Length: 379
Image 1 (cartoon, rainbow, N blue to C red):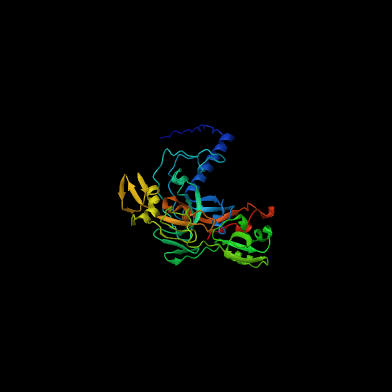
Image 2: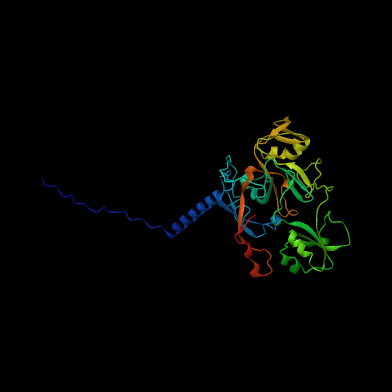
């Protein structure tokens, strides 16, 4: 039997319409925005140092990468937000988000916990007008972890009763007594001292009134010692507040507490699951924590007492962990000594390395980039 021979006809194909140049451009932009948003959320985010609170470890003009993987990235809380923005749309005062929807926030698994000594980026807790994930980003060094007892004695930090090792590039405030006016560019700027002022311009209760003239500088121990070598410098001494001076702007704001920036505590960092008795002193320490950061409603703190829904409570169990943060520029840092603890749900990530550094006040154009700081690991 003869088989019929099939004749195949080629199929007609529909021509593919070529994308316009505008469509190609738009697709590339969308892809880049989505990719950058995912990387920024899940893995790593870039930040810039705008203030000297972490000098000399981090300098104004440092650009750094912050790892979200170390402590685990947070799930978004405020979904109605313009991508790659924070509080406002670039270059304007227009809010970049709507807080109509607030999602429950969770943290994905990380490969480490926040440790004492880590340099951490977090959302500034007292900024209650913004959702947690859109509060201003701060960067400080973690001093105390949950359950730790933090104390400062004569400017030295003690952790659980033992002196804490100071950061290598820690800065303190010094009074430089001089016999004559100083060529500031040559003496201070050449020694990488960016913060200085004449003593007559600075009022500080911790410096005794005398006939000495000189400068207030913020610098490291090594550079302070180097200043002593100049023949026109009579003395260089660290400025430390006496223990009997009370600084009312410190946390907590209470007549029961008589502390200052150099003599502070002891104070215990709240820990999840730990129950405290609400004595008047504990209400001063933890009342705002209970009211603002624990997800409680209808909380009132007054006259050494805490009430929830109109009922006074005499004890409280913390719902999350907290941290105590300080800047490495100890006398020029608004930190936990001034506004309290950092809740765990405010932790953004760990600062890992500086990828670029631009001097905002260079001595010459060739010194604009601080080449010796590029790709420096943050310790």
